[in-house]
Length: 462
Image (cartoon, rainbow, N blue to C red; front, side):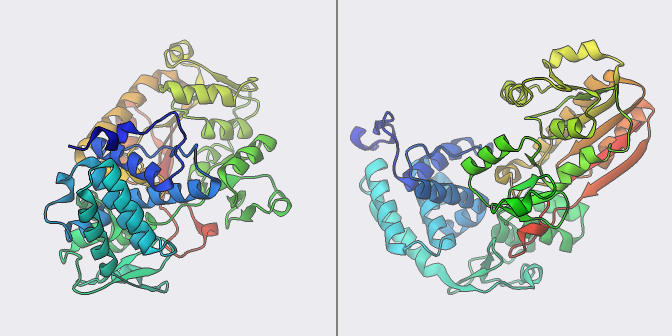
């Protein structure tokens, strides 16, 4: 057991944490206790300088994005599986190995020394020797960085791969005998850090080449994409053109983005695939009619609906108190949007010309952004989420007026959440699919952010 003076909890939490690696190791340690139900919410970096905050966030994201890769490589250098080691020591090894393998600008000696010292201080003194030995073996495992390749999908098929694909298109070569499994599914799992169960499911639904492109896509550091007014891009150096209109890539930091959105209330963070959902109603005449957004979240699609149908009455709600509070703040002052408690939907029975059901889903179309979602995307979770989707549909169907439209959407790729759910709605409610559109994620490692897009699905049912 660690001495009381060395325990993690002994750190004076009234003082801001000024060590970026300490911030990340502590957070990863907490997430390990809840694995795979991890929380990829904003990392607390209150006490860090802007530079150190950026480093901490980058390490945290990379450690979770490549978790299975890191776990496997560390297991090849340990005498027992890493998941049998206490959480704090696991976290230290994962964060240290992540920096060595995926942050080539950080000096190896600094990474090793700081991780060793952390383990000695907050785990126990004898842990220093283990951390030092293992991380130096990881350094020995790392080879040269290869330039971006055009045959990344083909390289995933190599039965004896001796390198790791990186999010920027390069490959990290590995030294010596390849530690990557020869089994095809296990190989894909370790190279791209996706659970084998998820890969097997996708291979049953999609072509193998498509699956490999998706696995690589999810290694990309997804850009922040905004919907902006025409001409705004040329007036702001922090905006770069996207290949699709009316989108732009944001190049500034988070605080600058908050300020930009405050000064430009018609702009919003929204990906092309998400934009396409509400945009599919643009030709509908909904002036003077009621629209219900039953799963509004923080209000991105609510905002979009209000911009398309400013003369409609939009009723928005969400079952999550925190998201509903954000929703209320976003639409303070009213306009055409009214935010209500979920139970208030009973007052709108038979009143809506359009019901938007942007339902909770597996998030498999946005795994480049929702890094944590892939680790819990198992059969049990999928069964649970599809049952929830059907319950939401059943609970809100009575809001639709005669002849009204259901706009059903997800940010998932699974047929069972998309087309099969739309078919279920039609079967049990005597409706028809008017149109439907699956969107496949776009963008591979090394590609231009201006071509990036998330994946998802939407259907107009009436």
